[in-house]
Amino acid sequence: MARISTAGAHSAALQAIMDRAAALAKTQNQIATGKRINSPADDPSGAVRALDLDKALAESDQWSRNSDAATNRLSYEEQTLSDMTTLLQNVRDVAVQGANATVDAGSRAALAQQVQSRLDDLVAIANRKDANGEYLFSGYQTLTQPFTKSGASVQYAGDQGARLVQTSSTQKIADGHSGYEVFLQVDEGNGTFVTGANAANTGTGVISSGTVVNPGAWVKGNYTLQFTTATDYEIRDGSNTVVTTGTYTSGSSINFNGAQFAITGAPAVGDRFSVDSSTTEDMFTTLQNLVTTLKQSNVSPAERAQFDTQMSATLTQLDQSLDHVSSVRSEVGSRLNAIDETTDSRDAQNVELSKSLSDIRDLDYAQAVTQLNLQLAGLQAAQSSYTKIAQLSLFDYLR
Image (tube, rainbow, N blue to C red; front, top):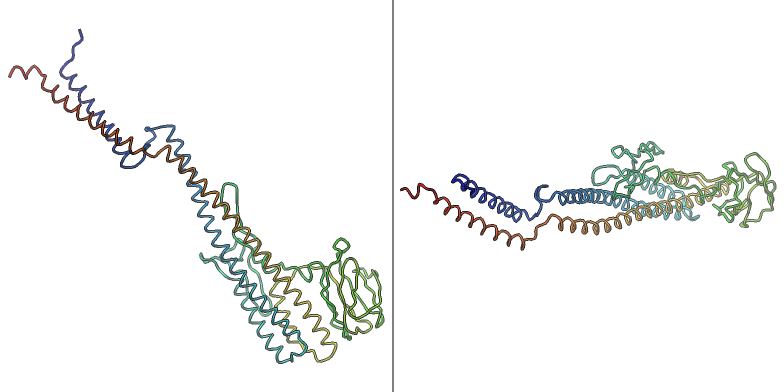
């Protein structure tokens, strides 16, 4: 027959009270924190899954901050490009005004001063900073001022890089463009070739900027059109080989190798015009060239012809600059749209992740309160039972 000692009964009763008190304390802690899992011991597999979900949400939060930073910087760039568009359009309007034959030398000098002021404004725009005090157009060297004006030239001190920002597990977005790409790499002329007049020309011939009518027929190179008589010309390539000849009529199209342009006026015998493959020209040089052209004398017919040719080339180059800025703005818009789409996708994913985490870790308050009441009743019952057991000692009967 098994015997239960007094000490054993007390120990068992106390252990029961402690177990119920511990269970009650755990439930109270769950209600206080609102979480079903407060330590790995509460649910080992659930705790591991919750840690994975927490990590995923933390990564998403970091990508969200990255997206905000990239959006802010790209928005600054977009506004800067908008200001550049306004500036270049203003300069173009001045160039159109200056090209008018009725404008006298004094008025052109005043227009040149306006363009010079716009050139200084363009340098200031190129050196703009974002909200963090970093230069927008220095490439990777965001703490280095990218452009410095020295006399009539502007020097670039940045690089050709663009920082990539992680905005999702699979997406990296460049948060800007280098100054090299934005300001220095503007296609020259019509983008395929650029025309010009020899400074020694004595006639009144003016060459247009021209167009490409057959890109496949164009052969890169530098070509010279020379008038052999007042009505005849020949075009030679860089090796001085005759490519084609023709009869000149003022304003009529001249075509060769897929290129088309026109010469107006009365060129003199020996006058030469160039048709060279396009390279690039920076915006600062374009504006400086306009300043120089507007200051030129065009008293003689030959000088006026040179002036008209240069102004035509400058207007074409300003159009190229405007198109170039528009292209860069389009890229900025595409990047902002990509960030917005990724943000929407990430927000939707975060909702699912948070729901899954809540299902695993969060507490069912109704169930917890019911359990708390049951555990409290059990604890009270255990305590009441212990008070009864504590009185069952043999010494209580010997008093």
